[in-house]
Length: 378
Image (cartoon, rainbow, N blue to C red; front, side, top):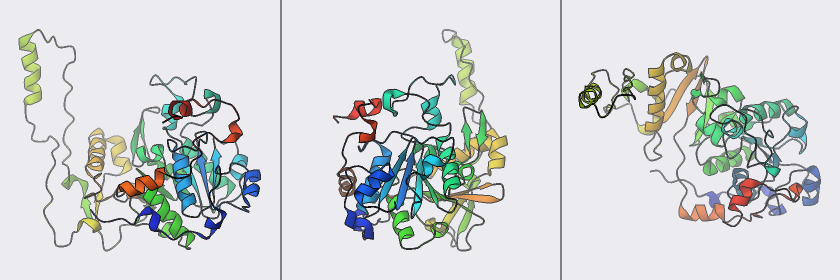
């Protein structure tokens, strides 16, 4: 596995001189008290802001602060207009958008598709403080507020929905969330390394559309670079038929019926999907190989190809040997770089040893946040 640059070895941004904030600001008044005229990065989240390492926005915010950036938080904004997305002003570098610690649809609905009556990540446990598919809505509102400001999409919702995916709530296959959100780049998995590298490079003047080599990121491109070797995904995994479902009502006490069902499952089908080995090619190296998944249009209409695409995605999740993936959506490609290199013990200590206040932001007063109550003494 290739070595990664330690998180604490980057040069600090000039705003380091302001030092760590007691809480990352959620209002212009707090920014004024800190002496800030603007934020370098603004994080938009679907959760209430609890400055504790169990909450994603706090980890990412404090990590970026340690790199010297001025980070503001817009927590659970009113998504009906762009006004709340403008309350901290225009960020100098980018908006970081996440639905929160949970996928927003899981957070809002039960498995029976009924609206939940509470939300553990909201003051007072109140439901309804975030929209359906919050990442999409927040990204669109950020673009309405400041059209030219880049959007970095992250969080569990972005990770789970980064390729063409089946949406239980609509009972259909949807685009990659990156396409629907019109974001500039998507960060998936443990994004500490990716967010630091993206922020550092943008602070040095690099445009976000040129940042295409960061592990753990996905972005839109028009074609495969000339020096890359493209592999058809069917060379990794051969799509086969969908196996028949064994009758769940077969009487297990009926030995003959049970044996018949078992025999059906034991029969080997030459068309069954199998993992196959790729032979070495003089043109092909792992770091310059990209696997072409079936397009969105194909997986939308073919359950076998949908299963195949997801199986290949999961085969390429080991950071030590994973290759890049690409999937066409209409006229564009969504490109997925290999997963991030895991953090070392020292880096974990660095991230979780940040000066967290370990309590909710004072703006919530004495309102109870159930998710914080669960971990407050951990």
